[in-house]
Amino acid sequence: MKKQKRLKIRTGARTASKVQEKELIFKAKKIKKNPNLIIPKCEHEGRCAFNKIRRQISRVQTYADDEKKLTKLAGSGDQLARAYAATLLLAHSEKAPYLAVFRTPFGEIAFAMRGKVKKEKLIGVQHFDKPKWKLLSLLDMATKKGLHIYSTKKGLVCMGKEISPPDYFVREMISELKYQLKKEGRIFTCEHISPKDVKEGSATDDSYIKIHWKSADNIIAVCSKCASKKSNIVASINQNMAIPKPDKDFSVDVITDIKCQVDCKDCTTEKNMDVEEDTYKAYLNGTISDKLLLNKHKENFEEFLKTHEEKVYIMDNNCYGKNLNAFLDALNPTEEEREGLKVILKKIKKPVVVSKATPNKVLVMFWDEYGTEAIKAIVGDEETAKKLFESADTSKTSPSQILKEASILTKERDIISALPEYRTLPPIAKFADNIARIYMTQGKIDALRAIERYKGGDTRIKSVAYSFLLALEQGASKKWQYTKTEIDFAQFLKKPALKLLKSKPDEYHDNLQGLLSATGSTKKIIQN
Image 1 (cartoon, rainbow, N blue to C red):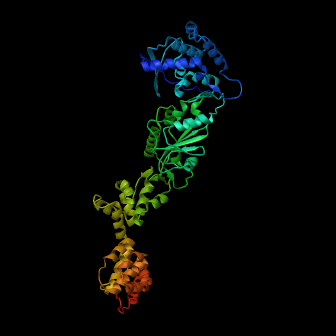
Image 2 (cartoon, helix red, strand yellow):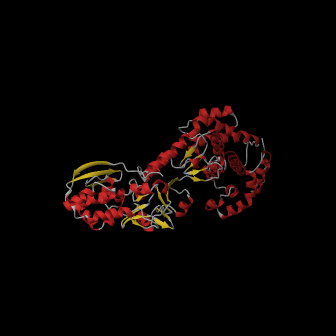
Image 3 (cartoon, rainbow, N blue to C red):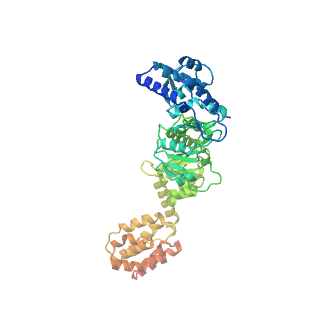
């Protein structure tokens, strides 16, 4: 059986104040009349382990007015009975000019030394009205005989060898925690946590401490926003219990705010979300607070991410495991950003952890080392990639912009070179040709911007412009800029406009001619 952890005792001495002296004498007179105040009430079946001690204390009480006999009884026999006799001597003398001071991690308390009695026994008897102190006189009993003793405002209660705290004790302990907790069944949470999430152990927007008080079958959860630097939930409850294995009555977890976004067969991240052993022990021993437990766990987890050698992607507390495509989908990059990021991130063998990230922000993280390879993924030519990388001024041009320019360069080289060339074009065809080429090389957004830049008054060109907007599914937002006549005509032109945008090189000339002819023009376009 694991021994009850004993408090480290440090004592000192000081002159008692009048208030302290008066209080100790008052309490000594109180237990003189009612010794049951220092003995647990048994609420279990079978023989009571305190029967023998009750008889010895009852015998001491019969000599309550015999100072000489009390002095003798304070020097021999059961330690608790000795402490009772020694404390009754205070009632006789009505003096306690000097007090010993007992210092613990939970604070200090003064008591009067009398007789040959252990300090813990004297403190427990003389401070029977203070739940956390009166248990000191019973800790050895709980350990040696395997008893479960609980200290409440109403008094001490022994539940025998079964770990079964009374319901009223459980309610009292929960109510005395330094938190405003809401209750749902047997789950108690702060206002920021859902009982459903706690029950399932699910991550929320904030990390939280989850404590299972096993013998009470209660779960207590407090988030990092609410967690106090001055509170330790387990210690607050434990200091009111004397049981053989207090550390086994609680399980403590920290549920991080890392949410799994993909299903992984073997989640290395989850394994390292467990509370580190030394931190766990320090919390159960009461040496660190709820807040410090959460902070230390966060520090340990961040250190793991820094030193971990396996690939994992985490963004804004969302974990994508090793799933690169899921991570890229969440970043929502452009086509060229995605290609560059894919090449770079495949080379990274350690965790990639970002917050409030943009594709460019992730590119910047690895650009110096892998920028050339990212550009090469776009242009397909290592020499060209090196030139673009070396000539780019990253203080003025972002990696995303460099990749975009590389994409335009590549498309101009591969696409535009395959399209027909024209020396002159009619105004409508020239406008349509310009929009189509921009769309093919620079994409939809730049094509829309080019359409916006047209400020002329040619009604047919405006109808062609709006037909492109319709083809690109952007007509509704720009409708107010066009007349009804222009819009109606654009509806007719939408099909040839879309056909031009999707042209293959060998179809381009005919499709450009088709759009021009659809506007009512009879002019023929001539290639170079």
